[in-house]
Image (cartoon, rainbow, N blue to C red):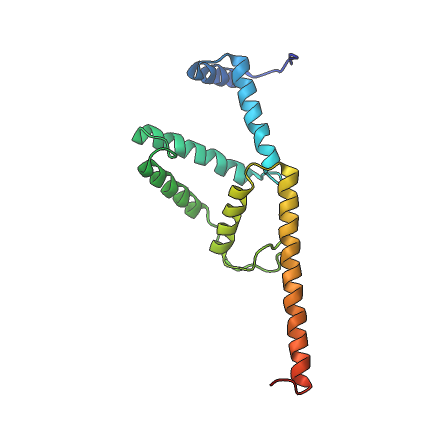
Length: 174
C-alpha cells in the first residue's frame, strides 16, 4: 500500500479524528473508509450528482441517524423506524418541491410508457433495485436497451396505426 500526503485544515482533521475515535479506527482507516464509500457510489450513478442531489443524500443520512437515535432502532431493522424515515424523506421532498406543472415534454431517454410522475418514480425505483449489483457500464447498457425497446414499441404502434388508417381508407374497415 502506498502512502499519500494530503494537506487538511485543522477543522477537517479534527472532524476526521473525532469520527475515527467514535468508530474505533485509526485516522488513516477513517479517511480510507470514507474515500472508498464515495468511490463505491460512482459505478452506480450514470451522471454526476448535482449539488441539490448531494445535499438530499446527506440529509437522508442525517435523518436516518436522527431517527435511530430517537427510536433506538435503525430504519432497516424496525418497522416503526422505517415508517419514520419514510415520512421524513417525504416531508423533506415536499419542502423542496419546485412550483410548476408536473407534466413532461419530450423525453429523449424515455424507457417506459407512462408520463405520470408516480409511475416514473416506481419504474425508477425498480430499475435501481434490480440493477443494484451491476457495474456502471452494465447499468448504462441496461438503460440503453430499455430506451431502445421503448422506441421500437412506439415505432411498431405507429406503423400499425398507419396501416389501419390505410385499410380503412380503402374500404377494408369490416
